[in-house]
Structures are given as C-alpha cells and as structure tokens.
Image 1 (cartoon, helix red, strand yellow):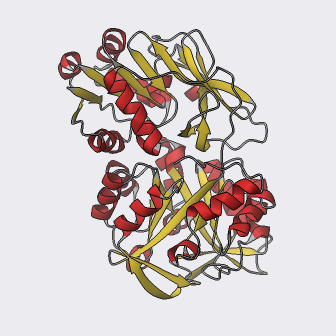
Image 2 (cartoon, rainbow, N blue to C red; image 1 turned 120 degrees about the vertical axis):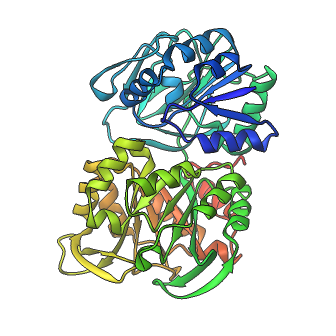
Image 3 (cartoon, one colour; image 1 turned 180 degrees about the vertical axis):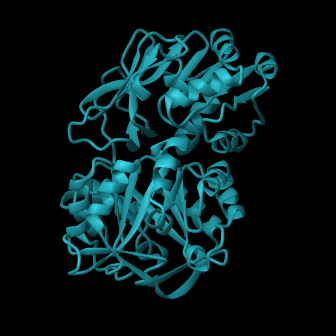
Length: 454
C-alpha cells in the first residue's frame, strides 16, 4: 500500500492522479496507524513551513512521518522535502523534523523573481517543474542540485530508503512519471554531477477560454467561436510541449456563478503538467474547491479588485505560489501608467492604475501576475510590450504576458525586451497555424531558455 499523507498542506489530488496514471492506487490518510502499516509513504506539500508544522503536530502526525521517513521507502515532495530538514527561515524561523541535516533559507532579493516558478534542471539534466520561495542548502545528503537567483540549492536528497525532491514529479510530465516509477521499483537513478549549471526556462502557456463547457476564442473579448472540448485540447497541448495551462471560465464572473468544478477535476485526471483556473472565484472556499479538484493555481481578477484582502487570505491559506492575479488593463490617459484596470470581462472600468495595482497585489501576496492586454487580445499583432515591461520592472514576482501573440517571434520579443517570465498563447495555436514545438524552436534558436524535452 502507498499512503499519501494529508496534513492540510498539499495538492493531494495531483499526487494521487499521477500514481493512478502509472497504474498504482494510493490511499490519502491522516491516520498514523495507516501510515505505519503502509509499505511506502508519500509526503507532499505546498504552502508555508510554519502552518505545515503546526498541522503535523495538531493532527498527531509528526512522529508518524518521522518514523516512516526513517524506516521505509519514503518520498517527500516540495514543502514535504523542506520539512525533513532542521530549521527554516520562513515565518520568522521554524523548527522542522530534523531528519536531514541543514537549513532552509529564502531566495535572496537580487533581482530574480520569487517564487521560482517553472521548469529547471537537476544536476544540469532532466527538466522538472519547480514552484517555491525557499530553498534547502547543499549538505551531506544532497544528491541533486539546481541553480536559481544566484544560488545552487538542494533539489534532491537521499538518505537510506528516503528520496525527497524540491520539484513536483506529479506535475513534471513524462520525466516526473518516470521518477515515480523508479521510486516504486527501488531503481531511481542519480544522474549528473552536483553543481552542474542549470537555468530556469521561459514558459509557454496555452490559454483555454471556456464557456458552457466548450473552449471558445474571440477578439477583444467579442465575437467568440467554438473551438472544442477543453479536456481533449488540454491533453493535446500537454503532450505537445506546453509548460503549463490556464483555463478561464470567461462568463462565470459576469454571470455571477461558480466555476465548473467538474471540468477542473477532468483536466486534473488527464494531464501531468500544472494548470491554473480563473473565473467564478468568489471566496476562499471557492479557491479551496479548485485546488482540491486538482488545479495548482487559482487566478483572481474581478474578485481581487472588489476585495483585495482575498489575495492575502489565499496566500496565507494555500501559499503565495497558488495565487495568481489576473488583470485586464486597457490604455487610458486617466491613469499615471497610461493603463486602467477593467473587470467583469472588460465590462467595467475601475479607474485603477495597472502598475500600482500590480505592486499592491504583489505586496498582498500574489505569487504571479498575468498582464492580459484588452487592446491586444485576439489581434495576433504582438503583446503589449510597454505595459508588460513596466509591470515586470515594478514587481519582484513572475510576470506572464497575455494577449496578442500571433507568431513565435512575438514570444521572443516579449521575453527579451519586456522581461516577461512566461507568455500565454491562444489563437495562434488553436488555429493550427503554429504548434507549441514550432514556437519553442524559434525561442531556443533565438537564445531564450526553453524546455525542449517533453
């Protein structure tokens, strides 16, 4: 039996779905006796170290996890790796389980975007998906290293039957599934040399606007046409090299109804890469439902404008890496930056300056900001470079360019000139004119760090 530890600090659905994809059934549990009886134990985690340790103790799971890590095949994932160390700087300083010697520290504020979000290499080789703000120092149990923000950090540790990783194998495509299979068989290989150079790649993110259960696409939020089934398209794009996916229920906010959770669950079962969901999120409970259904991130737009505290509340509850601010700016002489925030699908003008709103959202706890230009949306004439660059320079979290992609060269330009960390594409791939591989070949040829193995 493979037991997945539920301590209210992880995307358990993604982990369970990944094991199901390789034909292994698991049990999600908070019962120390079940953990003790399990043949193998998986310890996933996202969020903050302080609340995670508090949960472990309040649920009576700390000793059960410690015993499992020391006595049987054990897999720690992301926060579930960090908690195995001695102490973390997070939350003012937190004592951890002390199974692996070493400290967990925050990435330095040296111009790099924090959290680190995206695909990076372990020991200079295989690409895996990372999302974290804190890192474990290299120590005696380190078996894999990765570089970011000028730091070479521990991305894998091994100690006896224990394997733990900073990245998310359950959301790292075929490479992640291979690692899970290797862990199950006891044959997980260690590849490459510690300290080998690695580099975070720029992300290409297909956007699927969904209305009435179907993917649709328009121009400047108008004249939408039906394109197909969202799950089928998600699978095709995932297998075709997408680094992430994003789904917007484009009429949920305007119609004041909840998001389609059934669709989220279906996508989570079908793909092994991260995805975000937006539209129809009205409260913290909605965020929780989306995450429990299998999404890695929740995008808030109109709700955040009405109630900015939802950003801070969501970051505190689920970790800032789960909270994405989506914004729909339009050119406007009324605002200092020249761009005004709109809401409810470009139906309402707010008078809010786009750059100031981005700064405020990042300060509140948004882990990522999507700049979806209303003026460029669906035109395929290129991204809104001026605003994207202004926001990228104003905040210390990753910025995603959205709206206007029409050729691979447009992505090269937005990465190189506007300093975007990721770019959303829609019409240019939905039409079949370009594949994701077409886009990535041009990016790689232009010197943009690009994930090409998928």
